[in-house]
Image 1 (tube, one colour):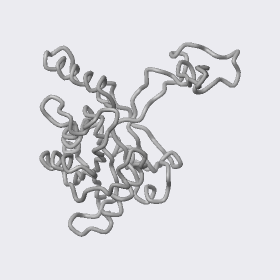
Image 2 (image 1 turned 120 degrees about the horizontal axis):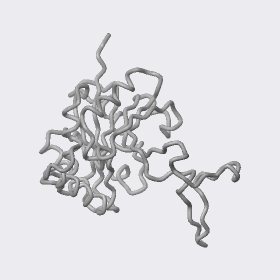
Image 3 (image 1 turned 30 degrees about the vertical axis):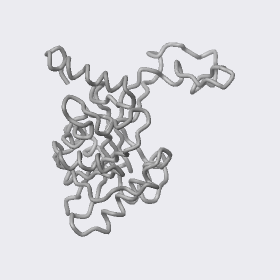
Image 4 (image 1 turned 60 degrees about the horizontal axis):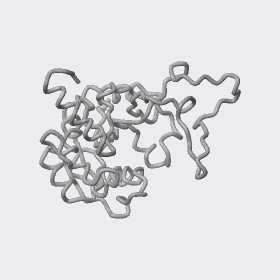
Length: 243
């Protein structure tokens, strides 16, 4: 049986709003995107690491750390409101029509904003996918808030309502530990190519989750989270923590 070609893709737009320039913002001497490239290189399964970006600066940084940038992503696929799934399809279409590299069989998306994920965790998610029974495996991290207990919507009139209200308020418990653990997406996706091309939302399929450790699952979307990543690296250098 032919060994599947598993390629990693990193999708990095140049127009980040939450933290301008975050994909190549320097974290401990390296651009943020370098961490995902290096983690992908440590995978036992990933064949090539490609980067889809609309930014020549991101492309140059990615190539410096050994990723392949086969094109600059079209502007219509790189806007603030452009669904990333369309960029995924663009990458899959490119892979299926190009002739320079082996044709991809399994798609892995490595999130630039999660710098501390490891090659072992990426491989764990790939192995979970290879076991079958799912269309997609997503990376997860445990959330400090529980949507059926202490996460709320706020209306324009400042009225508060639970994100997931109970069916019976007499059974409501305002204690996170009394509820099932909640998780947020982080790190990576592993997916079937036909599923990407034919389904508009990965949650429409059979989805399994691979849980990253608290620090490895750190996701950087703003300056506060970036500063926290810097703090963690400093603490590691001092020998106070390991990750």
